[in-house]
Image (tube, rainbow, N blue to C red; front, side, top):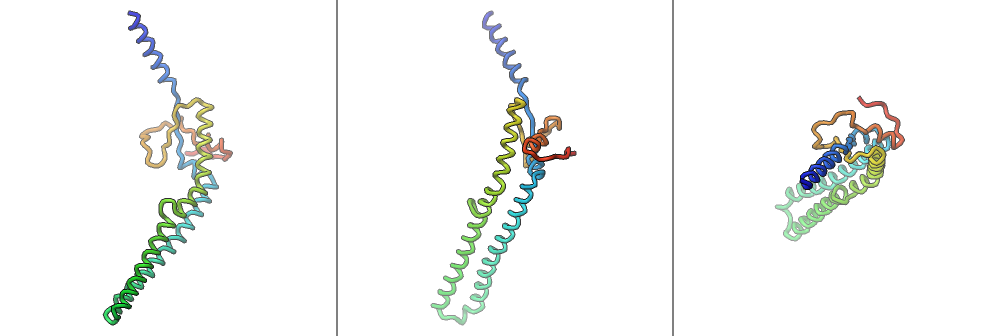
Length: 175
């Protein structure tokens, strides 16, 4: 009998604890778009990306031009010149691929720039979310942005504007 009462008390305590958990959600996309520094950083990244795309495309266009020239002339060229031209084309192609990887690969220039410009803003957001969660005793804070598995969220649990205010950003109530 004591075991049953003990188990029952334990289950009631667990149920109380589970219902006492508080939760909220944020929309990080909305938060980011409300931060002027993020918009500026994204604009700068877009400009760099466009510049680097053109640079890489120009390299590949040069490779294609050299290849076309070679194909047009190869019948007339001696074997040694053919090998030399093919090696030049291969070298140019390798350089183009290396440039592409340097600019857009994992750990490349775009990644590094994004890390320098965007990560500090993301860290500020995370710190603000953490502070609000601690102040208001939230057990969970979900993010409804970007392919979230959050299927429904009542707006009364949205703390996105609070996060922005915590970061010192004036917000107009989102609609």
